[in-house]
Structures are given as C-alpha cells and as structure tokens.
Image (cartoon, rainbow, N blue to C red):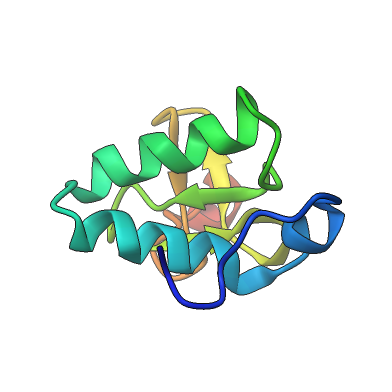
Length: 96
C-alpha cells in the first residue's frame, strides 16, 4: 500500500486528500497495471464504491490524471475527456 494512503473510518478526510487519487494510480501502475486499467480501478472507487471523489478524469490524449473541477473538459464531439493542455479548440474558438 502506498505510504500515507489509508482508508479511514470517516472517509470524508480521504475524499478531500487531493494526492490520494494520484498515489493510488501510481501504486496500481507499479503493480503492473496499464494506465487504462489503473484508471478503471480509480473510476470504480469513484462511481461504484463512492470512496473517491468523482471529479478526477484521465486525459484521452496525454493520459494524465487531472481534476475536472480545476480545468479540462469532456468534449461531446469526440466523446472524450481532455486536460487543459490537450483540450481541442471549441467551434467558437476555431472561428476566431
């Protein structure tokens, strides 16, 4: 288990640990999971067993994990998530 990451009886503190998601993701990769499989575990911990906050996503372009509430977005046209650095220009931006 990643040092410093532990499940708490009251998981609100764990949910607000910004580094927890990244620590778990890195640990899963060290255990041999691909980035995609590691993020599937993160997704399950967010959606199925609401242990982690559900605003972390993996960029479809660079495969980084990012906090959706701090930047990045889901693009309907491509049906993918993008971090702020990889986000394709919107139709309005492309027209400018």
